[in-house]
Image 1 (cartoon, rainbow, N blue to C red):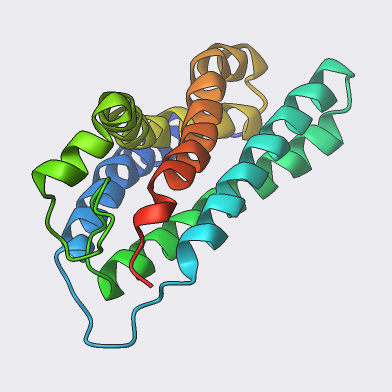
Image 2 (tube, one colour):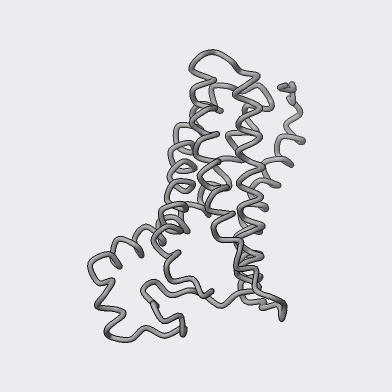
Length: 193
């Protein structure tokens, strides 16, 4: 359901909130990554949050299909579900990293250090892995304001702006969801048991 928010003061407040959230979320994540809780590692989480990422991608594709079929109600529900899934992913990802040591790509013995032999074993795929990982992380930061502004414009009924923002936000959000699954599949053999 859209609303007719026309008060420029309220619109400005929402825009400032989106900008603040877009800066605060990545900063909070960075801070929380430096916190290590002395608890049992939540090693079961990576396949869970990778699955959530995969579900997010499917839900986004469903939202695109729904809007192309003219079903705004289904589209709205699917976008909200995708937002919820992305939030659940983020919570699981942070919880895992707050309780577990980082996993190195190629660390086949799980000791947290890469030997020349381990580096050599993944040399043909490591460039792809790190390019995918870095683009995934960077775009996950940039999609925050894009998705929030896109959602905001739809919420207030400004569908022209919504479409403009979505043309950029949708492919990036889909890329982040799909690349998250691929990153997980590539690094999963190296998770410590």
